Length: 406
Ligand code: SAJ
Image (cartoon, rainbow, N blue to C red; front, side, top):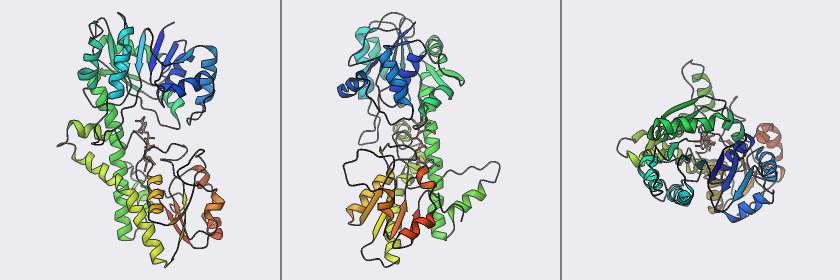
């Protein structure tokens, strides 16, 4: 039985720790967040991710997964810490560096270190390797090192961790092969081996591809608004072509991956990454564009003190995650502008910034309804029923859940 010391019990580290512990690894999970470690040890967690609590709690109870505040000796060290953007949209590698320093004392000959955090190309080679060299072990020979990016979709993490293909970039071929042995224990998809810097770039390319394609859809939606065309019909018909697949426009791109990772390419090649930069700008302009659209609509309808119902505040459907949420940004801006906003979201529990309403309360007597998140609970509603409860008749469906069939 191999022992894994996993650093960072966040949205990737925690499920990975649980899955590894279910595959016969002894897992020590380390996090600097004392409250989280205490809650985990009290078998008292209720993470946002569906299914995670029922996997984590028994693993901790059985002792196969031990949450702790500091690392210990192991065969494999996995680093799954955040790399948030700085104010200049560069990758803040502080947590990666700190994690690497924190394991130095515990590294032994023959160990394997795997980095999973999303990082700019070259980080494993140029930043992680020099830190790990301070252990006195020769990297690639006495200490193996690999980069293996996570690729899972929040809301579907447990399934995708197992089913998705994985890319493993080794600092040398032997490191990649050893990392493959670890992932093979639970990954049912294909595992592709490459070098560390290529694997780092691949991860960023995946999310940039999505961002650029969403930006194309968002730009089209603005063009169609201007030309008085129905965007959803245009996309539906264009997608009938066998080689066209336009993504969905919306109120912008949120979360902590697609809206952030493209900047890590820009950081490394600012002059070349022109399309990637533009896509970020297009997507980032969407919340303000929706605010303008709402303001224009209530003005045209000549409503003096409009009551605006906002459906959804999370960054995307099916999650209670608010990080980088364009919907929340829109609600905040409308509130700051002095509008009476009744926001509701079935996925949000503890929210203190402003009062949230039930769907019925939000809609009752509203002049304008702005659909911001395509939660399934909203999709199931017949918009005509909502209209009956409203005072006015304005509906702005930013996700096309009701208007897409028009
Ligand atoms: N969105 C649209 N239109 C679309 C698709 C998405 O407006 O057609 C918006 C969503 O509403 C959301 C944002 O984009 O605000 C991002 O959502 P998402 O579902 O595209 O992606 P994330 O951020 O939840 O997860 C992504 C995934 N990357 C890709 O699909 C290429 C996931 O596989 C990655 O593992 C994850 O980033 C990550 O951790 O990097």
